Image (tube, rainbow over all chains, first blue to last red; front, side, top):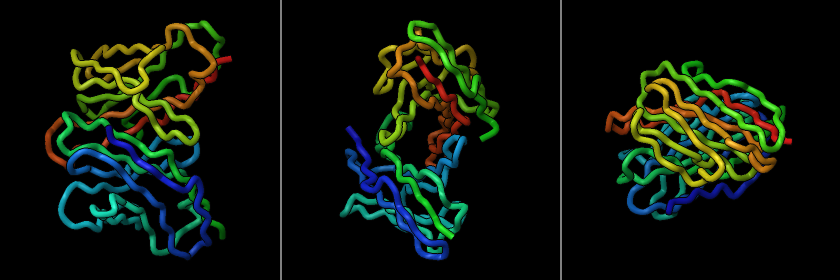
Length: 115
Length: 116
């Protein structure tokens, strides 16, 4: 069975500083990997995904993530954080060979960007 | 995503009551999902449906049932609600076209359910 770990419950960063949200995964075979963001009182919004190809994936709002197969990681990054990036971030995985795309989510990391 | 709507947005009920949460989508997707969100646990899959006649249990289906009334509608029922079903419930949709670009799931705004 697949699993996702987000080791930090919360990440605090000052506005303008780099932001990193960590994610490691376990899955049989090759993975599809996703990042979603949840703003207060809103549903999850898709940020980016890794399917194949270039290990560095660029997504919405200036976010990017790097797929590292040897470390089974898919960390989310943003070079310069904004206060408006404060939200709950979820990493998710599904096996590429799965029949359908049933996602397994991590527990979430709350990001707080201070002015 | 405004194309996926959930009703009600908030609901408070009592132990033992039957509750139905509804989800509608205008994205034309054939796959629909119900998740619950609990603090620190992320989202866990309750049920999923790949088309109107294909409904499957997720990892935490006990105490829940679903109905896929049409391609665009997918309802979740709690036959006899209990307090540990207090959670935030999300509906999601995706497209079955088998290309990676369409694996993305699109989520509704959520229903906050409290069972007293």
